[in-house]
Amino acid sequence: MIRQGRAAARMGRIPPYLFAEIDRQVAARRAAGVDVISLDIGDPDIPTPEPVVAAAEAALRDPANHRYASYYGLPELRAAMAGWYRRRFGVELDPDREVLPTLGSKDGIAHLPIALIDPGDVVLAPDPGYPVYVTGAIMADGEPYRLPLRAQAGYLPDLSAIPHEVVRRARLLWLNYPNNPTAAVAPESFFAAAVAWCREHDVVLAHDAPYTETAFDGYRAPSLLQVAGAREIGIEFHSLSKTYDMTGWRVGMVCGNAELVRLLGQVKTNIDSGIFQVVQRAAIAALEEPAEQLAARNAVLHRRLVAVRDALAAVGIDVPLPRATFYLWGRVPDSYDSIGFAAAVLDQVGVNLTPGVGFGANGEGYFRVSVTAPDARVLEACERLRGLRL
Image 1 (spheres, rainbow, N blue to C red):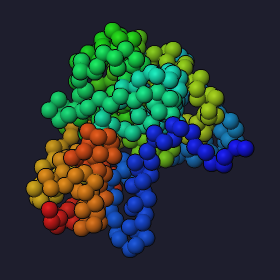
Image 2: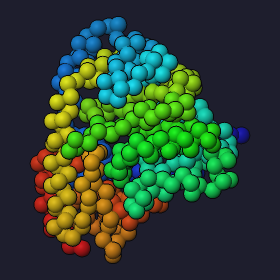
Image 3: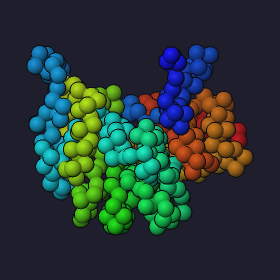
């Protein structure tokens, strides 16, 4: 007789998703009457650009867009994605073989290990890092190996320190720059070294790059695909979520090595039925947006980052300003661990931050702030933070 509700063994290795648990805790506080200001999840509050919304409205009225979408995305969308790469990075992509639209980048990130990983294979994942790098490996019955990201190394992993027996079984390496949660950036020389390492050891290189366009003071983040030889072993994920304030629309892309794109497409065509065609039409409009509109949104985010940095400095917590992303990553005061500090801030002033340990063991001792709340709420949070008693 089948035991009802028996979980697969892998589920015991997958922790509750960090931000789902944060949502639960904040909802409980609000239900108790606490006015919580959330500076935790990276969910932009700035409205989706009006031309994108207008494109969606027009597409919604066309019944042709209400049917099943193409599994591989509209040819026009793939062409728009390739055109964006050409304009932004000078990278030429074949839209039919080297570009695949995804249901946000999380979709492709979670499913890539299904296409590549067999039991016993190792997935190299940054720590601290986006939790899906690890959970995706586990769901594919792979073994995640966490690469420490340390401040003294600029939050870049030391690939030479990976034990030989781990390298021998490694099949996939995840990188993510500009980085979540640390906000670190990586030079093109680092990507070149990573490409050489992956080619030497026959490891697939996957670069998660949703924050390349959220940058300040003239900084321009590089693409992995600009590096010579990268397309022989690598792919890059992008999302329209952060760049165009489209988190709820669920649209992203994976680009690069044609065989890796094909394999991920093979997985996805057996799991989902493609992106709602209305969203695809909206995504085309987003990718054609003039650059000055993005610059205006980034100026808002930078102003908020400075305000929160200054508020924390007023109570003795020095946090560096990032060159990219909308995150601040700082050390907790000496008398706290990361969960204890986040709890103290929430209890004292009703501001919710993310404990660094939620991104992995090497995030212990740190916290992350996301400045994706409206200006008025960010400024109120700053006033509250100045009243912290630590």
